[in-house]
Length: 300
Image (cartoon, rainbow, N blue to C red; front, side, top):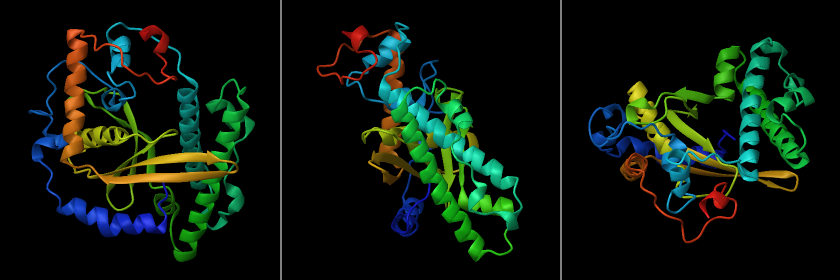
């Protein structure tokens, strides 16, 4: 999921990175200025990045039901599948790093990366009853495995004296479930994201579902938090949309600059949703609900 093809890498290096370095970003919208408006939170409420960014419900009444009325609901099938596939990717990255670190550099071969065994499968699909999700998890694992094998051999063929740590940095330049404390920005202290570095800091989000405009806001939120914590600029992000088609996995990537408009929109969303929760203001039912909404029955 994290490897760019040659066209995407060229677009990143020759277009987006130069643009992002030349583009002026309002300093008031940099995460390291969290202690003053507009970034300073008005309410003492902690929101998850997904709660700020998500707009599946047009009126955000799902947030009202969850945070004001404290209504809990059962995740729908799409949410369950997305969570399992995310966990599969996370497990693949950590297991692959573990195996490569435990192997001598001159002994690394195609067989050194493990398959998604039944034992490993149980860690991402505990009940192991959904054959469709299990098939997708295996397909995702094999897809990533082949790409990593290719990357390992490619790097080793060009760098005969490379060490294992440098090899891993070039092959898997990503920290999965990177933990972030978003408290400075009125966000949850227990955030997790994928942080990636091809040539400078980037934030990655993977969405197993339909492409939505507001998905960019999630990446923007994590970028603001990284700036608040580490005090370096995070100007780039991308969202990956994997699609399963027969025996293939198709990838669509949305690579973008995290500019003023996205930053302002994220902060506006945060303030408005905090206000709704603080004032316990019911935004009302949407005119049109999506059928898979986990709050459909409670809302109606």
